[in-house]
Image (cartoon, helix red, strand yellow):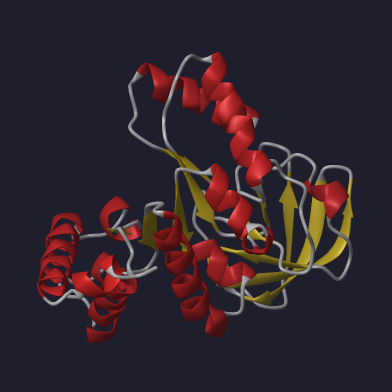
Length: 264
């Protein structure tokens, strides 16, 4: 659905059928945590709202930057620290399902600090499971506690979608390089993700800039590169995977392995 600048729009913790006037969110305490004047971003920052009124079950907003909104898109709060847990009741239920089905890795979203990781470790221990935890770095707070997070987690993901909303866009390349460098120094796996081949959602070929982005992440020392909407909802999922693999293989032919092996 299309949200138009200047119109009012509400977010609610009630379960409703969303339309151009308002939608449900899965964060029950949201109306208590935002205040008039706060900025709320939807869909990786492509839609911007300003809070007019908050209380009860609803947050009334004005649309300051419009755009197209679809189901299950992310929500960010650049002007306020939200107290949401990185490990929700639904996460616990989902993780039990994952344990039963022998998942190989756990990706923990919106990690704030090492305590979030320890919470999941304790849950796994009680469930007699030992599964590596990948901390998704996508909040300002996670950058502030990155050394502790790296020590606690089995690996990290440079999750550039939400990170690019929580952090100024012009800083993302430096942040990405810093995260990869720190993970490499500790011998922790690092995954680089989000919009690596974004144009392949709708087209059979990536842009030159996207190919260069993938290669630069590899040259920086990332251990894995990941597709998201390209393979999840895109029109050319198989071609996206094939292209990513081809680009990675070409990059590895020129990769300076000796320089990385000689690092202190």
